[in-house]
Amino acid sequence: MEAINSFFLEISSTQRALILTLGISFFWLLEGIIPFRILSYNKFKHAITNILLTLTTILINFSLAFLIVKTSDFVYINKFGMFSYFGIDGITRFIITILILDLVGAYFAHLFQHKISFLWPIHAVHHSDESVDTTTANRHHPIESFVRFFFTLIAIFISESSIAMVFLYQSLSVAFSQFNHANINISEKVDYLISLVFVSPNMHKVHHHYKMPYTDSNYGNIFSLWDRLFGTYMNLDLEKIRYGIDDDYDDQNNFWKVIKRPFRKV
Image (cartoon, rainbow, N blue to C red; front, side, top):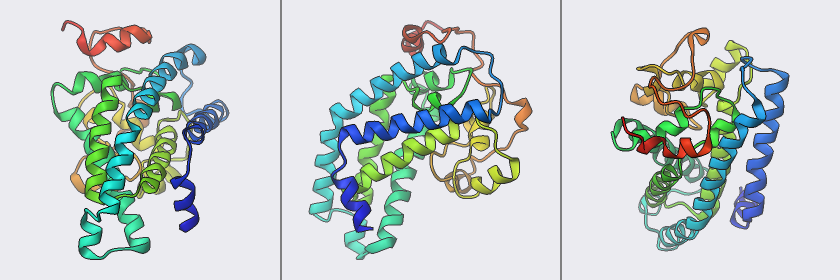
């Protein structure tokens, strides 16, 4: 545990970017070997828009990283949180911290963007991808990066998380998001077993179905228990899944059109 804590306490921006790059590369290659669905698209052209959006997310997150460091240092050093109050430490603290960061920083951040009307058009950029693959994981409008950042700060306050734990969670979050968006074929039995604890590819594919109520389900990022606990878990025959959004806006996977999507005239 100490070794993990030390590594993520000193992890550099370059190392974090490397984790992101290696994850995309690994699942990108795996999609070619065991694809879930043969998508009729130019894989490289499709990736350009999503990678450009990923770069905007990286830029914003790195620009605001000092706020995460300051917030984390404040709550951790001043013992401002539930762990100090209840005297929780060790492996129990480690597990609960990861759970809180995932619940507040990912599940609630995602849920609110579906339920709050002015946030949905921004998050819809993520759902507008009609060829979901591992690059879709980081397809977020720049404004969404600020929304998710805000929820992460709240999660840090609640969890009294050290900066090492925040960086560890963010690295896990990136890896799991790339995994559950990946266009890979996993046996339904294995996928189901994974989904009992973690968000699996088949589980998350349902969330990207273009029609309600499936779009408003399976919000989890790492742990599937939040969807089961809050009643947002849904199943759908994989053969019926069609990616995208049920509207008439055609961005043709063009970066600038995707950026303008939330502000279009309806």
